[in-house]
Length: 98
Image (tube, rainbow, N blue to C red; front, top):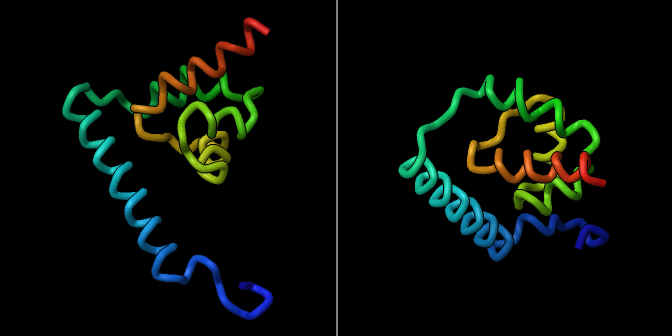
């Protein structure tokens, strides 16, 4: 498509899939927020972020379902929704066992 000068993400089908995925993620966040107290972002920065130094972006993606781009942002200090924190902490703890 790009060779023909068209952007694959500009199709109606692609936009629909992206919208559906975003809506699903938002529903999951709302459900998590309803069931949990939301921790302070500093907890992630202080306790989890340092543990992620040796974790690959691919492993972070597999553990959380976040995109590689978002995982890269996390490694640079972006704080993801708290529902991902336990998965990231668990993935980081695997490094200690290997």
